[in-house]
Length: 257
Image (cartoon, rainbow, N blue to C red):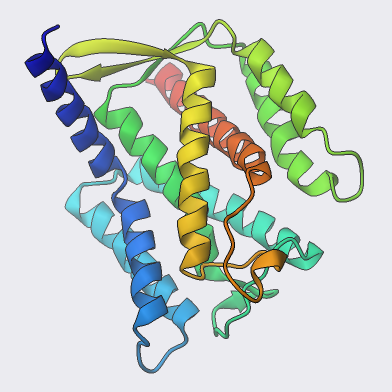
């Protein structure tokens, strides 16, 4: 492939990625806007919830998102909100600002940050015609996803097994690949590498989100600080469980068609 063709393919790939990131981009833009511009009548957290609900409605009405994708995103919203309520209760981070739409100290807009990960995965899956090669058995994938999600809760009371889970992910998916299409040409990437790349970019996104005050870690209470690389492992596992849920739902739907 010559240089011109390579640049064209990179442009196509970037375009599809950008279109898949509309929801995350709206989230970051809204966080920035509401940090520096005080909107009237309602607290910031409530405005964020309204903006995200309207964005969700617009994406569905415009055809950027399908009804099946909305179901997946709603599931992620609930999963994320449950995790947020627990983590805030345990003091892992906080939402210090006022808001009417808060449950146990957690603003309802927070679930959309998890939903945006699902939105990206669903749209990239569809736009790039993603397929899975040598995917592990269903029961292994479901059990691993459950174990990763539960560890976010249980490590507060028991040992943290995230590194064991990470090693198990490498073992289980060592021979698995993800294929995707760009401009009619098929490419492939090891699943484990895709996990790491997505997790890294979400860690960058986390730094942007905390800078704009989406939430605060204890060490950011007085002044913003870079989120430590230790959090990268948490986001990596979150990406893995998100990918596993989306992949499982996609395969179940395909088996029923």
